[in-house]
Amino acid sequence: MLAFARVKPRDILDQTLTPDGDPLELVREGGHFVLRVASIPLMSSAAYGSEQAMAKVAAEVLGERKAPRVLVGGLGMGYTLRAALDTFGRRARVTVAELLPPLVRYNHGVLGHLARHPLRDPRVTLFEGDVRAPLAEGGWDVVLMDVDNGPDALTADDNETLYGDAGAALMARALSPGGVLVVWSAYPSRAFERTLRRAGCQTQTRRVSARPGGKGSKHVLFVGKAPRSTQGRGKS
Image (spheres, rainbow, N blue to C red):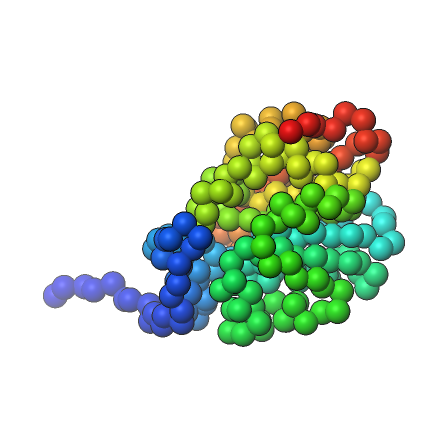
């Protein structure tokens, strides 16, 4: 008798294109939402533990600040934004930047319940566009970069420039004195660690669980802390 693998039910909710023209697909399968780019899974509602960890790690490194200004680069499925709101308190001011209009639409709609509708929180300002614009404003106590797949960009080729010397210098300059940058990545990168150090950040790398509760594979958080003075910052 032949044995057949059980196929998970798959429901296509939306199909569109990335800025580079690759297929972007939101599906529901096996009880979870999955976003794919060119058939490659980019994010899943089953694995958001590392996104939650970003804000926790940032708060630990930052220390006490009464009303922190927080920038979240990348809306995703809303988990990073929700974690920032829950971690930094009622006086926090949080801006989230998202380049892809479909992700904003999904978070206002079918995905909103996953992270308890963070876009409805009055502390949140939504910036629809390239995260470089709010980064250039500067004065951020915390920057949580959850853009694309980390230094190995997947969604848009232009995202790769965020993780080179010029992009790292921009992120470093965006921080207030003693501010904290946390960059999410699917994979380790010694090269990116060196890039952050060249930008003037004290740098460490954390391995965190992809799924809530410490289960499953590991993702990587690159943590950079700005000096207390503006001297020694990287230049583009």
